[in-house]
Image (tube, chains in turn green, cyan):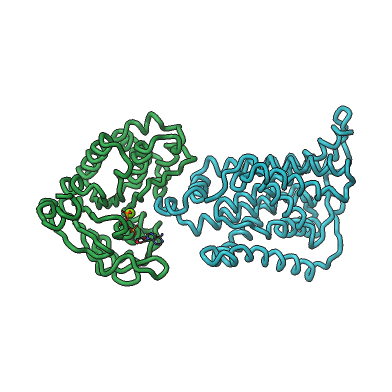
Length: 234
Length: 286
Ligand SMILES: Nc1ncnc2c1ncn2[C@@H]1O[C@H](COP(=O)(O)OP(=O)(O)OP(=O)(O)O)[C@@H](O)[C@H]1O
Ligand SMILES: [Mg+2]
């Protein structure tokens, strides 16, 4: 479904990714783990068009997307929920969710998606008229995720959705991700919580200093000496 | 007497408010101060003047048409000039509208001469008495018209899908682009809307104000002060700031002499900016 083929990318000339290749099959949950500054978010940004790769290609359902602007990539069903939530703090929960469905004009379709998101995160329905900025961090994360779902994604990229959440909420969040995956959405999950992420995913990649160093199924990675030492503290 | 002056300031302030609202909108969405805003008011005044001269259309009646023309002009300007430097260095962003302003003012001088002009036979003239206060009819019409246009723009930004997208860009451009919002296109609309505000205000002003190439400069400056007063990025704040300025200008100008009225306006601005750096209601753009 997604094919990232030896891309390099950086910020004002400073490289952050070198020769990164990965692929995601339809229906999978794929995770990318790595320490701070490894370049995980840069991969997400490059796929969603926020950062342009300096070399390499990205195809989505067979079509090249690496030169498209973000809004055209979203329109193809590839949706990126960025690190740090980035909800529109001065807008209401409903307005945030409606913006998530910006690429569709059908009111019945928007209503249908709203119902689905409210079902997954009932708290968002309760808080519908509240401004996003007035909610707790956990609720804002639910909103960011719900807003991503409003675009009806085929592939959903989640960049550290568990960042700053209480343990109880993290569990809820991972349940939600599992539930989203069951509805047929393909997921690329970027996580610092390596153990939870590897348990949840089908396959995973380990990123170090902008390069992919290992890949494998979740179970394989959990057994790997390198991963256990570097990320699981075992 | 003071009641009289306050009412006069209030009316003037409403027109300032519309100009300031456009400026605030543009700043909030793309983070640039539009120094050409006054020149846009001037262009709209000339457009009203010529429409009146050749088609006999009254400026107040032609205001929707002028606003529409200025919207189109703004969208064009955005894509031809402004958008090109938005990602560029800071100084380029700062100077581009400044350069545009000088270009427009000089073009006006070249094309239409520096002569002062006035619309002949405006539809609204004379005064009406409201209790002890007399009100100049064209100013009343201009202020009501400005409030109506400001209300429409406010409604558009708050309640329509496009308006919501414009708000989203001003709040978080990166997140907005991830929603599928075409930032370039929407920036163009926002710039056009800002110009439409200047345009409608220019049309209302043309009903009773002298028209000359430099006429917009003061309006642009006052709008800038109003926006800073109200807080950059807050459209309501800009409107309130502008009304305050109108009142300070007329009442204060009466007390200290009208040649000092703008000094007073800028003094008020300095005081408020020192006491409240983010303006009366502002939160500032990121
Ligand atoms: N906007 C930016 N401008 C310049 N450099 C950046 C920018 N964003 C990230 N970088 C640099 O690029 C490298 C990769 O950053 P990236 O955010 O992709 O890492 P990450 O793996 O997501 O880290 P984290 O776990 O902290 O989120 C880092 O060295 C970082 O300092
Ligand atoms: Mg990151």
